[in-house]
Every structure is written in structure tokens, then in C-alpha cells.
Length: 253
Image (tube, rainbow, N blue to C red; front, side, top):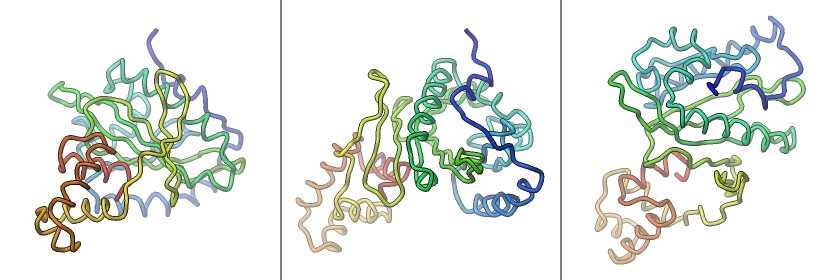
């Protein structure tokens, strides 16, 4: 059965429709995000769950699929229906269902501390699907604690397939991963990097070689090699370039 915009909103609980005054009050949020989006390589947009659309889309071409930001804003959730392949569209609907179910069990005062990230494909103007990493965090809640506005960041993914659905709490090492086979969230205690491993990634970001990193951290090259190998295993990547991209996308550094 073909998906519709309504399918995205089935798991969403909305109670207190924002007034015109409420929308006036959130304008500074939108303006601040618009300014901040000029400083990042990522695409940025804001979802309005009450109006079932987008109230801001940055001009970064990654998300636009050959359109202007104004066209994507006008399309709203129809953008997903048009540019996400059917298989990944079904995945997005499942993520939506599982994500809001998880969110409903969070204490109201903690709800803005959580974010979710996952990978899916969008079809570019050349008709080739591009795997992107998509992060979403509550920006403004309504009076009942439901998400009114959500802030989204989009970047190219370092993974090689859709999925890898993770929920994190700000300033916490807890990471929850959604198991697509078992249809449940699992606490991933193994997705942690030590202080040394984070240092190695940060210095690698700066273009330092293993010898230079070893000198900087007063360690041997063999020790750096050992920690790099551990990083690759923890993040399930093949090289330092993928490790840096993964760590940045999933807030390890």
C-alpha cells in the first residue's frame, strides 16, 4: 500500500494547538537557527508537527534534491514521499513509530535532552540514491510536553546502508539502538570511546599522522595503532576517514 503524509503522524500525540501569538514567540528561534545554519556544512531544517510541514529549510544543496528551499518548504512531508525510495520510506515510518513510543516514556522535564539519528537514502537530481545521516532533536514542546517543533541536521553518512538508529541523551554516555529485527530499543554499553581514543580522533581530524599523534600524547606509535584498531571495531568502520565522519555524525567527538 502506498504511503501517505498521514502515515507519519499516526504515532504523534498533539493536544494544544499553538496560537498565532505562540508562532510569533518562536520567530527568534527560527531566525537564530537560520543564522547558525550558515556556519555549518550540514543541511538544516525545522519540522512543525502541528502544521505538518517545515517552517525553515536551509539553502545547503545536500537535502534539496535540486529544488530551492522554498519549494521543499512548500512540499513539507511530501518531500519524503517523492525523494525517499519506497524501502527507506517504510523504514522512516517505523523509525517514526518507535521513536515517538520511546519519547512518550521520557519524563517531561527531560524530553528536550534526547536526540535521534539514523541513515536513509534520498534520490538526487542524477537519479542516484545518496545515503544521508539524519539527526532530529526537540526544539520547542507544547504545553503538554509534546514535540511542536523539531530541529533536524542532515549530512552525508559514513555508513554503507540505511538504519543504524540511535537515541542519545545530552551529557550522558547512554546510547539506545533500535533493533529492526526484534522491534525494540537496546542499551548499547559498548558504544563508548575512552578519553585517549577521542583525543586520537580529534588530532586525526587536524591532519596529524600517527607519529605526530604519538608525540603529542607521549605514547608510542604502536599504542596509537592499538587504539585506532579499537576505534575501528567500536564504530564498525574500515579506516580513520570513516571513523572521523562516524564520530562527528554520532556525537562521539
